[in-house]
Length: 234
Image (cartoon, rainbow, N blue to C red):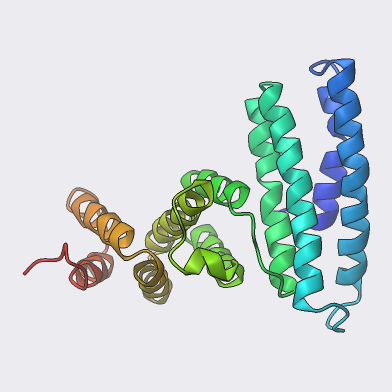
């Protein structure tokens, strides 16, 4: 996982990487965004350097987190308009750097779309159980820090779809980890927050388990949790 310093260095090098792909106006827009991103990094790194000393409350930390996500969304909008899908995906992963900072500082995460997209891409690229277990742990922390409105029957829209995508990725990562405790926590919270979607997910995974070489314990857990839904065997 990238650190704040890694993310900062990546963004500082972005104008050089995109110099031949952006026109003058887009480069001006990029540099203006990066100047504001530098403000975010200065604040976030200064707070991190103070270690365990409580220097800001949840409200202040959330405002800083929102600022970082707002800048990231603008940068993603720029790469989308300039049709740079590779860079778009790379930059989207920086959302996990902001999310991890939010977790460290007990901030609320209010912008889930880039996080959910980055996690879905990452979960699909990982195969080692230890890596999937680590990703599951991060997703557990992200779910915990998500703003209350996501957990209280979110309305239809982009953010509700991102909330669903987050839980689907978490469920898949948990299954890939083969860790019973991780799977139980992921399934229970999926069922708590999105019961119908969780039931559909579990039904699909039980069907997939019939054709894949899942350990017996994994299959039993999937069947057990599916049985707690309306789609379970009767």
